Length: 319
Image (cartoon, rainbow, N blue to C red; front, side):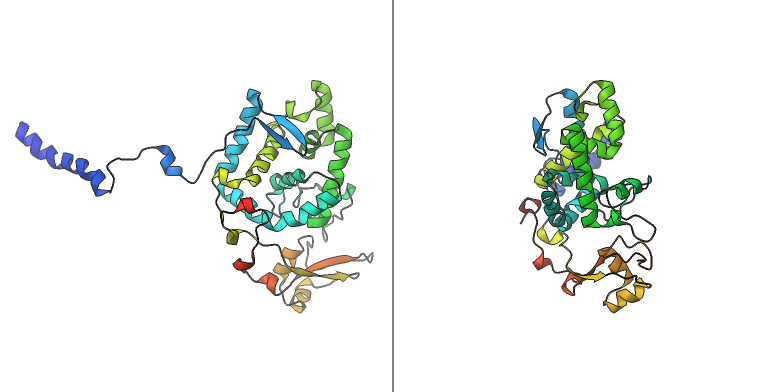
């Protein structure tokens, strides 16, 4: 009986014993960390300074909320990669506008979490563009919004409008965190909840989950862009998206056929709209004789040249 069992199990036991050597190792790795070497989770800091305001994270609930958002940036790989690549294109445009309008530079991260830096972003509720303005709010802050022209998709104009909104909110609340929370929930909602809950700052409010996470998502975004390698993201400069190169053409009249106009400029309609996402139809109506500036890509702007890509922030790349 024993000899039969040996001859039956012997070869199997021999294979099991030799497997580590056959695989080039004397140990079989079962550590979960070994299967996910590209991802790391930063330790939650004791505090974060955002827009000049220090947010202390020593209370358990704040620390856990922050931890959740840090984990999200680590493991939402597709989105985190894209916002890092896109930031190299858009931050050089946005940062000077924030400075000109006396708005803290950190508020650019609001744009990041609102739209993932997608110029064509549109929510189910109807918010649109990098800053995700609703139609009525966009008009209130000076943007032209109709079926033909929608300046919520205009990078520079929507940024100036966002600055105006945030400055109005700051004047109302006296701190940037509450101002940013109102960007998500609306000033009326934040004001009523601060009053109802007897608080002075939005980070302590009991709110619906989306708004409750909003502030901590902003803080996490700042930490992510300051050091993406701590989150496991290691890009080279060639992988970043370069700023668009273009010339500006001014028009005070309508353009009846944008497809033909694009061909005259040596491009096609799709590229024209990539550079001018505020154009919403196949024509540009201009009955009131307004002045519009169209961005027309240069020859170099249409070509991918990895050697010419310059990182906007050296911390974003490994070389």
